[in-house]
Length: 299
Image (tube, one colour):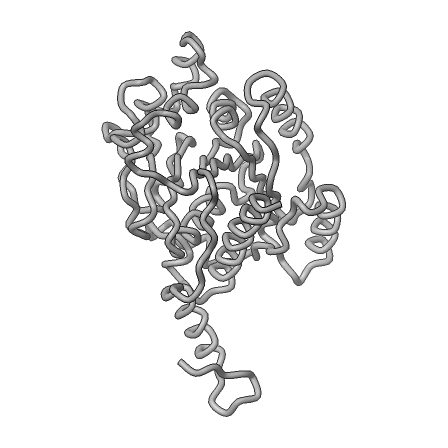
């Protein structure tokens, strides 16, 4: 397809969106660097509604579209990540609940997403809601997920990236996610009180670093729900960038109806509306995450 600019005869907004969709659906020309070792990234923020699950599934889909193998672990009892990836998560299906209890391994619980042949998901069922109570009495309760990810079963899937979607709390499930991960990605919405409660999250991360996982670090801040029509969004963006510096991705995720609609159809926004601004933003963010990992490898 030839390239058109706004001044070209025949240019239309629909044509521009079609071109963007083509780049998403046929990404062969753009190769993302493969990490030198498996990157395990926990997506955490105890505040609800900040785009945590949405960011998890769309970043995972963006990387998978470019040939990288990605495993998503849905650690939220609501199972929204499983829904968005088109993975069955009714009660009784093999899930992360049985993995945490040691009854099955991750390879047995993982299901291929309908979004990409390179994308897999360990679903969450409603059974996970009571798991924190059961985990309390278990030996090494904070390291159950880490043990599962270190098993030989994971090598059957051989993912380049593992994304762990946390519940909106700082309980035992989130601690398990942080103990199992190398990196933490924190989504922050561009709205009032954006940084409220973030101090507690960072303190919890420091406690995990001090006592359970010294290798853990906050690698990425992702600004979500950006509305360019408001001064508030720019103020929050400036505040976050001033506080976190280079940890904040250059890409920001816009507030978008398409992003919100996609999970209702069991899809990520990259497949639901590949030409939308939301889709392109998540694709850019995924590219940035992959390239940053490559830069750290060569630094």
